[in-house]
Amino acid sequence: MHTRASNAEDPFVTHLRQIEATERDKWVSADEACTKAAYYVNELRQRLVEAERELAAAEQEHTVASERLAVVREIIADAERLLTQPDRDTAGGAEAEQPDQHKPRPSSPGRSTHDAGPAAAPTVRALVLEALADGKATQLSSIRAHVQRGRPQTPPNSVRSTIRTLCDRGQVALLGRATYRLVPLEAHT
Image (cartoon, rainbow, N blue to C red):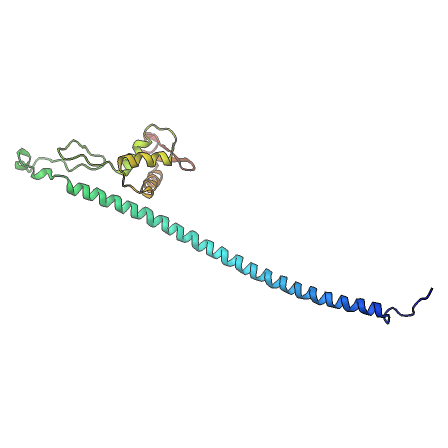
């Protein structure tokens, strides 16, 4: 057998070291590319988190604006309805001649509705309370359907806003996801 004195001088070992150097250079390049890509991914994740925060804030603002718009629309509808009812004070007869007597105002929520004018549509609040009157757990979709039967032009956000207000006042309880129940009268008086 023939032994060589020095492996470093062997052309085969030299060739293997050249391959090692080439592979090490490729590894360094790949490692730098991974580091750079990881940096970009982290930067994009941070941007995504910021964008999601901005989206959540914008959605919250949109929800609040939708609810406020629905309430304003409901107020406008109530005002228009009140303005289109006949004025009972000028209807003539004994009522017009007795200014000192108390005269009932046009019907509004919570007041008697037995005046001579056309029946006013119930308010969204009244319809929501009516839908929950049985005291049982009721799904939001059922409440909305009940309100839509009484007031077909009512937007869904108005129903949700009214329910939220009733919940805040302690008149309605949120039992679970979109499930509500009327709180007994003695519990919130």
